[in-house]
Length: 117
Image 1 (cartoon, rainbow, N blue to C red):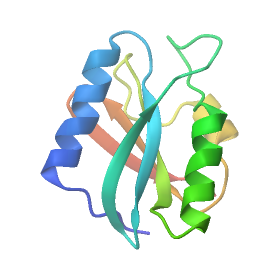
Image 2 (image 1 turned 45 degrees about the vertical axis):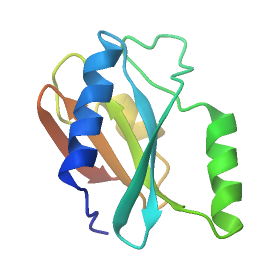
Image 3 (image 1 turned 90 degrees about the horizontal axis):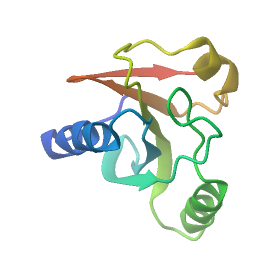
């Protein structure tokens, strides 16, 4: 899967990460086909948001329900790495659902993409 991400969406991701400071931000990538239409910042409900993230399950359930009813699809997920590493951590790789969706990591001024397999 290739994602089409506008400059505005790229800027928005960088802003989310910057605004979260030393905590990891996280959220949903929504759109149709391969085109991102909306980035939805969600609460990071992880026990330790400074070195991990967990997307608020109520937001994920709401987005899945909306997609089933003809709304935007969940194309993937994003989170930041305040430590500056653009690579998925061991926890990221172990925790990621192998659902074919894209994962974006924001670190500094960079954004990387990967998919859990």
